[in-house]
Length: 349
Image (cartoon, rainbow, N blue to C red; front, side, top):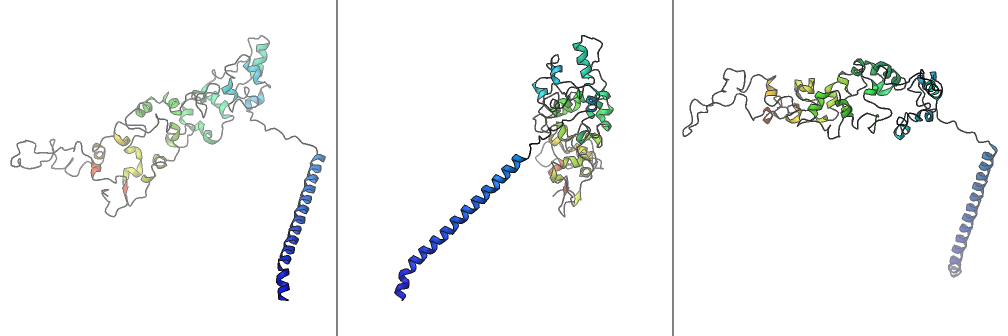
């Protein structure tokens, strides 16, 4: 009996394998039939429903364009070919509905008068408008985000027009449609002092193109002092110089108050953008100490090193400089921005 079982065991395994293969084949075929029926049903359903065209996105239209008659840009570029070149056509302004009428009031009336040969028609030139009138045209669309508080900014109070910095038709920059390639060049047209400082030996990488005026300032904002992109000078500096933020166990008062007390962010001829050379910078606050200035042992020549020359020394120099020329307070007070050391009350470690 056992011999018989051993002889038929391979046949049983082959029969079981064949049965499983047949079952899998039937299941796959059934699934394909069901999927095909679903596809055909969906096709029939879509064919039965009519195609409804989706509405095209409506471009932004200003209040000025709403009060003027409709006009196509092709009617304007017939005479103003330079204003409607490829730069304008590929810009955000050029893609708006009634693009010319969005900014130029009564543009359609002007075009009609020109075609009729009339010389007394309206002239929609923005160049003849005041700064406030020009800004009102721009703010009819650009009234949010960075421009939300423009009317309270220093530029608006000084009657600076949007077109003083930006150009809709002849822009040079990659962003913001500025009249110059870099935002710093635009700012330097008025801010001559800051331009001169940026050319000094110690400066932020503005002229190298790694930073710009807009990295720290928002020219459209009037909520913060100096149009800064932060609530204070220190908060702005800490965005890059995070290691100076603290808090420290021992704080240095001027550092916590204002970074500009010791540094000139626009440029300096002294290392690290300092406003004065060491030790003169420190002596603006620390008028005495170490026998340098302001104590009883100090003289114009400096405190005496010894009562007389040492043996064998013939020099007559018996005093040291009262101002420690070519020396620095930071040779000892290295943690001048603050210290977390238990023995760092003098910022020496």
